[in-house]
Amino acid sequence: MQYKELSKDKLLHEKELLQSKFDELLLKKLSLDMSRGKPNSEQLDISAAIFANIDCYTKRVYKDNFDLGNYGLFSGTTEAKELFSELLDIEIEKIIIGGNSSLHLMYDMFSHLMLFGNQDSEKPWCKLEKVKFLCPTPGYDRHFAICERLGIEMIPVSINEFGPDMDYVESLVKEDESIKGIWCVPLYSNPDGFSYSNDTVKRLANMKTKASDFRIFWDNAYAVHHIYPNKEDSIENIIDLCEKYNNPNRVYMFTSTSKISFPGSGISAICSSVDNIADIMERMKYQTIGYDKLNMLRHVIAFKNKEGVLAHMNNLAAVIRPKFEIVLKQLEIEITPLNIAKWNSPAGGYFISFYAMNGCAKRIVELCQKAGVKLTPAGATYPYRNDPNDSNIRIAPTYPSNSDLQMAMEVFVICVKLASVEKILGE
View 1 (cartoon, rainbow, N blue to C red):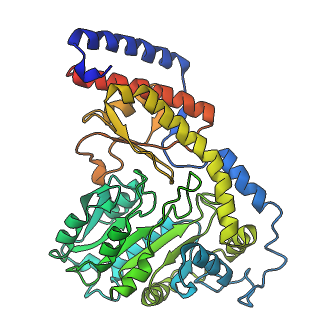
View 2 (view 1 turned 180 degrees about the vertical axis):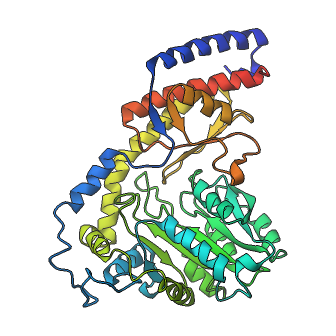
């Protein structure tokens, strides 16, 4: 049965049935949360087990011959750099270890560029008449919030399974000097779960830009967040490619252990060219004498090396995978036959991107909220929270228990159906 092929009478009858089911849901007084990509307690317990009884206080002197409990080493410990170097295939001299949040590093970098520019800038970005940034959409709402907060104009760029629309990107950056960069989540993008093709990565590294100080903010948040064994996506090393194409300073790469160890209690890193790292460290010396080196040590002791991280991620994937399957199965059974929506089935990351009929996303989120299921606000995945089609909804399946997630998806599909019928009826 496809809704668009039903007569008005049959649609009205379907709406009546759906409204009855929705009213029954209201009586349950549910309180379920699928609004953010947060690990659930089972994932955190797995992390807690490998961090239990770690002593990072008695023996505090390691490769740097430095007491890690003291001030200093503001670019991070050698051991932590070596761990990220192995994970990301980047030389340790191109890595700075930060605090508990890569988002903090990204915001801090933008603030630095606004106040001072970078070594390729003629003047600070705040002294320019206009600063623009390219934003592949749908994308990560916190990226867009940074730009909006700092008064940077956002230009939406469509994204598909190969990455941003590179023809459009290249046409813009070669002509407009005020376009200073682009946001990228290259592996299992938020929310679509797309991984950039090697051709896209090469074009980003090699493209001609009008702005000499153009920068790629490469948010490698899901570098090891694979869901399905033997289906891992991979991408080329953009730092190496930028050097190869004589644009060595073009990219800042960010990552963290927030969804590897503990959100808010992990370690982060920024990776870039040697010149960029020197520029960042020159600025950093005025704002910190060093991040939490004992936490860096704690992570190195817990994971040891790349092999240890990947083994841990396999354990987390075993918890996450059934959650994605609950969502996808429910959508396949309940929504596919109706031909009223589409969605992605990512091989990694933390989200499923759902596309309702145009004009239905806000209504679906509203109905879910009334029924006790909290979703990411409709439009949040677009600059200025403006989804021109009012279609995209980011589903975050990781936080609820499996039983709660099953219930939340039962609510979700009823709300999708009800909103779709209302739309077709012109209500």
